[in-house]
Length: 125
Image 1: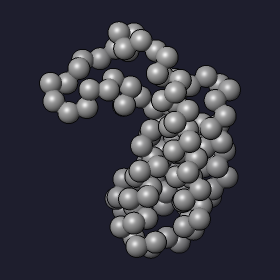
Image 2: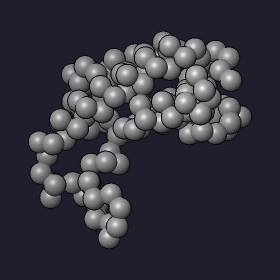
Image 3: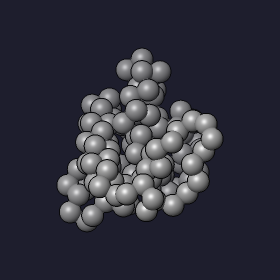
Image 4: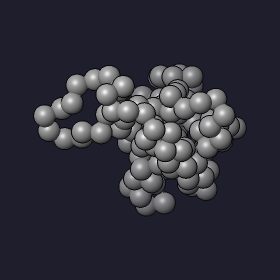
């Protein structure tokens, strides 16, 4: 159960994460596939930009900036709970990472929206 993070905050971050993902995908759609390094797997995901986080966005990317600001306004405990929601793991593991590492992992996950909503669903919130 959530102690410091309320459901509305988690849903708001999820909405911002979805908007940032859309902004990121639109930006990366302009990049030629040959310009993205990496091997194409034989099976599974063939979208080379699927694993890229938000760091490729230009500094004026408003949705990614709004996501960063929303996560920054949360208390360290709430960010820890948000990270635990994302990974469906315990708070002990999330707090063991430290606030900066957990925040960086959250902000680098292009699928944060889906992870958060799945976590809230599993908690029946």
